[in-house]
Image 1 (spheres, rainbow, N blue to C red):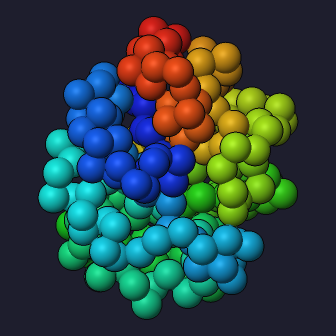
Image 2: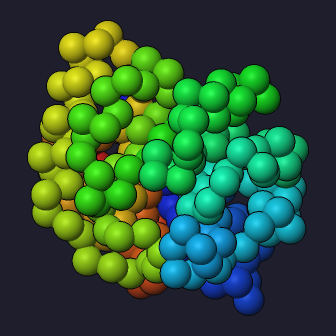
Length: 217
């Protein structure tokens, strides 16, 4: 079973973004996680196409783009053109989630669906075979550095059971408050991809932090 680490550049040093991207390139991490926030769906604004395009030019690993925005369908083609390898939209932000997922896949990239902590796993029942990735938020989205919500473990186990019962091969991603201290438990619960922001970029040695999470496999 795939077990990947995706450092979130939301926590990178934007005065030295190139340096932090190169650091991840040199590490054992697997993806870059790119959080896009619009100040409407979540109470924060992060960055958009210029940053993604800059990272794409130097990144040597796939770009996992997480859209925390309203009406994401308006921008799917632009994010794909800017370099996204995966686009994840929020179930709560999509009126016609099947159509959105089909649109993402039609662009030749992987399609993901995220759910907030207050959204139950069974809300995904009708799309278990329609997405390549399901992202379980383990904090309320909008800001980095939040405390991990323990009920996430149960949600990961529930989703893993649903995917297995449906013979779906989608990945399970977890984002929020993730780091070396809970990586093993999340992988054991059935997660495949762990997003880590502060746990990597605020660590005394980011490469060691990444390696500790990889060793949790």
